[in-house]
Length: 183
Image (cartoon, rainbow, N blue to C red; front, side):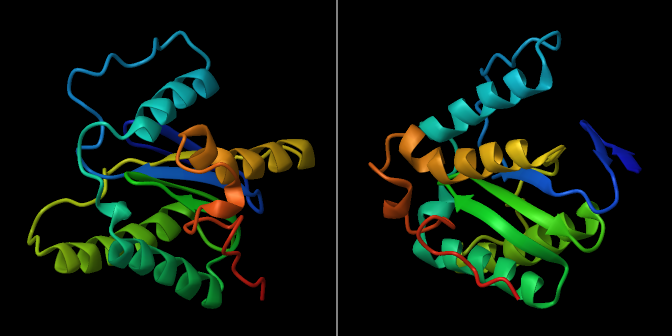
C-alpha cells in the first residue's frame, strides 16, 4: 500500500480502483465553514461537494466547452496510454470526479491530468502564470463491488443532484452520456 500526505492523507493499495475528485483553484469561498474534523471523512466530503455543486462563487471555467473538451481529451489520452482505465467521470463547473483503475501511481495520474490541462486551459482562457487547479485532490480507494456501483452512480448523478439536468444522460460532460471505450 502506498501512503502520501499533503494536506490530506492518501492511501492506495496496489490494484485498487480509485475515486478521485479535484477542484478549481479558488473554488471554495474563504468564508466557508469546513465540516467538523470529528465528522467521518465521507460526511466531510459530501459537505464540500454540495458546496461545489452549488457553484455560487469562485471560478467556473469548466463551464467553457473548450476547457471541458481539453480535460476530456487529456483523460482519453491517458487512458489510451494505459495509465488507467476510466470507469466513470463527470465534469462540473468547478470540479471533476473520476472513478478509475490505475495502472500507475495516483500521484502520477493526477499530475499528468492536472499539469497538462492547467497549461492548456489557461491558454484557452488567456490566463498566464496563474494556478488553475487546487493543489490537493481527494481520493478514496474502492473496497468492494457494491461500493464501486454506489460511487459510479454518485458520479453520474452529480449534475442531477446539483439541479442542472433531469437525467444523468442529459449532462454532456459525463460517462452517463459520453462513455469512453474501454481498450
